[in-house]
Length: 88
Image (cartoon, rainbow, N blue to C red):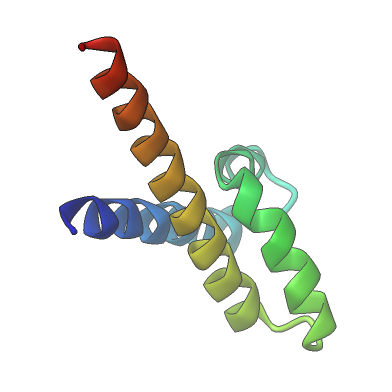
């Protein structure tokens, strides 16, 4: 259960950093490109979904957070599983 909250916090922090960077410097700035790259799996799904809902920034950020949360959770869970199997 603790892993879910940690990965959710990481996903929210990454999406917030992306929003702040794009708000301060604009979408086509170096900080925005870096944070979008770090939000890779979620930003693609978020942008596509946001466009479908009339270029809604709220939908873009929400989908980005949810996709990143799932990605981070299953990635960390897989790493922990491999670590547990390797230690046997």
